[in-house]
Length: 558
Picture 1 (spheres, helix red, strand yellow):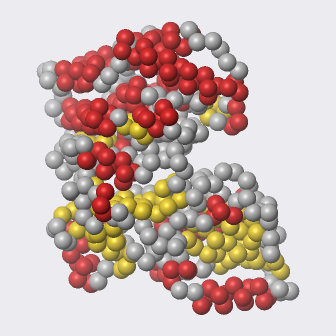
Picture 2 (picture 1 turned 180 degrees about the vertical axis):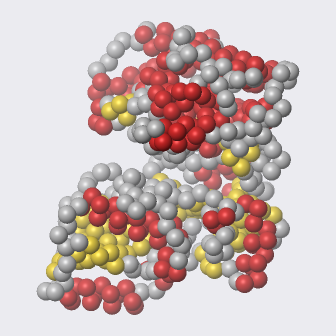
C-alpha cells in the first residue's frame, strides 16, 4: 500500500477554534475515527479538522504518538501522528478491501499500551497524591485548569556522571494542569508545568518538549549544566534533574519515511525529534504582570545581568531574548528562562551553520529580521532587550503611542514581506523607529521621566552601534545573493576584529544605563501594567476595523 509522508504544518487549527472541552474521550481515546464528507468538498478544512483532533488528543493525553482512521464514504486512510509529522496511507475502499481495515484493527488491539502511543513515564496520581498536589499547586492553576487530572511524571538523568552537584538522578513530580501548551501537532510541543516534588517538599518547574536532534541544536539540559557548573545559579534556572527520556517511542519516526520511494507527499524538511523532560528550581510569573514600571525594569535588568554572566563565563548566547522568556520568581526577581535556542560562541563561529534565524520575531534585532543569513551576535541579543522594554512600554504603559497602538505594533513589531525562497524579511519598521526621527513620533511614557530617559538613551546606543556596523559593512565588497551567507560570515569576522571600538563592545554600556536609571527619583509608585493592546483591538473590532490577529507571542524560526 502506498503511503504519504506529511510534515504537519504548524498552522493547522480546527475550524471550530482551539477551545475544546475536556472529557473522557479526550483522556482515554486511543484510535479515533474521523468521519468526513464523502464528496471531499474542502480538503483544507478536512486537514484542519484532522490536525485539530490529533492536537487535542496529544495535548490532553501523555502520548508519544497517536493513530487515526479517516473515513469518507466507503474509503479510509490510516494516519500516524507524532511530534515530527504524520505518515498517511493511500485511501482504500474498505467495502472491497475490508481485510486491510480488519488487519489494522486486529494488530492495534493486540499491541501493548506503549506501542499504541501511551507514554510509560507518566501515570495517574493516586487519590492521596491528587489531594496533596492540589493543595500545593492550587495557587498556580487557572480556574479553567481545575478539571485536569493530576499526573506523576518520571524525570531522570541518562548520564548521571556528568551531572552537577545540585542534580538528582531521578525525580517523580506531581503535576496538575499545564501552564503552557503546544499550539500545533509538529514541533517542539513544549508543555510547562508547575510541579510538586514530595521528596524535597518543594514546588518546581517542569519542562516537557520534543527537541530537534539537528547538529545545530544544543540540548537545553547540557546548556543549563554548563551554566550552573560555572557557578551561575542566580537569575537563571538551576537544573535539578532531567534529560532525554529512554524508550523505543521517545523519538519521532515520521522523518525516517520522508525520503521513501513510496512517499508522494510534501518533501519539505522534517527533522527527528527526541522527547526530553527536566525540572528546574525557579517558578516564574509573566514579566508583563508588574505592579509598577520600576519593578518591571528591575526584572529586565536581572535577566540582562544573567545574560552578561553566561556570556562572560561560558561564552554562550541566549539567542531568544523575548518578553515570554523573562520571568519573575517568587522573590520578585527576574530571571532569563528557556535556553533551548542558546548556542556557544565557538559553535557559532566554527560549528555547522543554522539555516534558520533563532528567536521570537517581535523581539529579534532589526538586522536579524532583515537579513536571513546574518550570523547571530552579542549585539543582536542586547538589542532584543531593548525591544522587550519598548514593546512593554507601548503595550502595557500609557504613552504617546497609546492612541495608535494597533497600527504601531503592526508596523514596528509585526512587519514583514516575502523574500527569496519564501523567507520572511522585516526590520523596516524597527529601523525607522531607531532612526533619528523615531517613527512614528518620539516615544514618551506618560508621567514617567525615568522610563522615558532609559528608553531614549538605550535607543541612542543602538543607533550608534548600527552606524558602526554600517561603516564596516560598506567597506566589504558586495557579493551575489547566492553567496550571501558567505558574505555575512565575512562581515561577522570583520566586526569581531573591530568590535573593541564599537559603542556596544560589551554589556557594560547598557548595564551601566540600567544601574543608573534604577536609582534616580521620579518613578511612579503604582503604574501597574494595563493591556492597552487588547483594549485597542476590541475597540477596533467594535468599529468594524480589522484587528491585529497576531496578539499571541509566538516563537518563529525563520
